[in-house]
Image 1 (cartoon, one colour):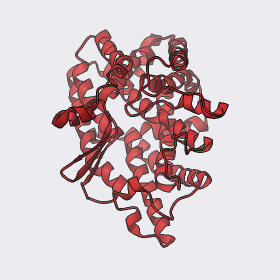
Image 2 (tube, one colour):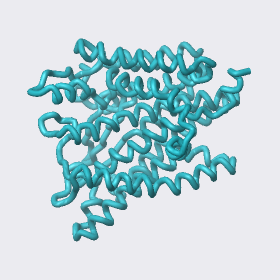
Image 3 (cartoon, rainbow, N blue to C red):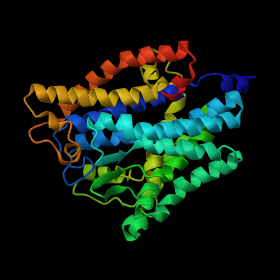
Length: 387
């Protein structure tokens, strides 16, 4: 009876954890539009500790977001027990997300229709991962888990294979495992989220849903999270496998710590995933108990992740455009695709300004997100499940 109750109830920690990473994700994108820092924030030659951790904390967003997308798919299927309809939904929603990435989401980032610059980011990866998951769910449970874990644990063995050495077929390898900016016909294709191992992250998240339905799930979550954290520390300390960029001793202990934590995101290395998913899983039993205003605040965002995602890009970009024009800067600072990657002379703020803009954006996003959450709770229209 207890297991059946777990299957039929919405798991609070999933929504709260997803909400937390959605809010943190807005910090990363606020930094993109408002910061005056022109270097890679994790480049130890140029970064500061504050800038490094402002970027580093947002590393939790994509892995948790994609992992929990798989978890939500499993929990939904367990309620309906209809694989055919679940697979069709995953396929349609995956294709829909890919289209959104290349249209609505792209316009939110660029504020133009100049397709000389095409960016393939997290929604692209989620969409394709759902397309593949639509087929994977027909396999036995342990086959799905094995495929997911094989991608996560084994893909770093492919790091030495480079797309630039493959000639005309290199673009396919960029899409699969070797993220890069691909130039073709005068266009730039920013392939940031290669599909491997993201497909494996979603597949493993799908299997993780079964763990969440166990009566002793808190114990299992603590064990799983702790194991991932320990694996990260041991493998990272040994510098033998799991990340293409070994850590090195720096001129000071704090810079050495930053080097230790600076794992590769594109594509996400095994250690990157252990470093992010481990603590997130460990925290879930505690988030289940967050039955207060703070938990409720984050739960709002976690209940409507796609609505929030699209809205937050338009809002943050619009805030930067409006402020820039008020300060007399040209509008093309925020509507020219090239300016996204080359910097904006005379524009930007130090970290306090970035954090202030982030706080304002999150507060503004809360109210439409709460409204849409209530719409989804009160209405069961089919199209609401696609937003």
